[in-house]
Length: 245
Image (tube, rainbow, N blue to C red; front, side, top):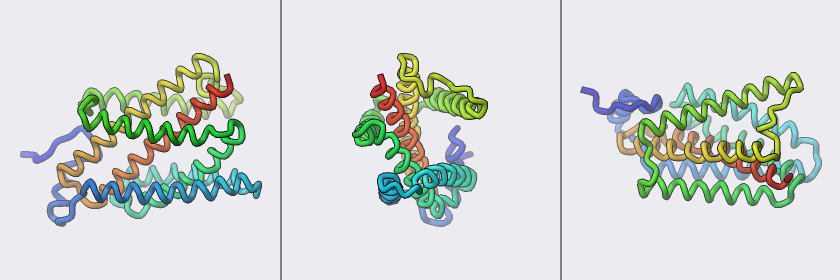
């Protein structure tokens, strides 16, 4: 009989059996340490690219594009080769840091102080969702997971369609509009991004309880960072819309 069954594709029974054979399993402390290390790398890279923008060296735009593309490629590799997360997750943090630092500087130039507001709100939402998860107010049931995953995929498809249409000079007003519907759309996206944190917390908890292999600490940290980066960008976009009203 199977020892562990889950609808989560990254939590397979073979993974836990392999961990048991190797005698090295994922721990919560190890995950927190790795996530902290990745945050340090991201912040350091962000400070560097921010500085390039403020000094007007002309390197900010290449750093923004290079960081975004590099982070996307690394994320795809990590998703399909989870055991490589220990090597690639730190590189992903650096790439995202370069991207976030540059794009944050652009937003801050348009609305001074908006970046600190977005950072504060991002960590505030993170702490709030963690508390709601720990006290059991929001539970990661299979129904909840299905709804959030479906909503996330829908947003991803919508953004992809917007990118394609933009190549033909067609703008999706909901994404960039500072009108009522544009702000409501951003609020919905921020809510979905925030609820994705519940899925990340559940993935970490299940991994620890079921004895996932040690490299899963890196993979879980990577997954949590992906959500935090998305949440921050959506909050930044929302605040920018509000400031333009």
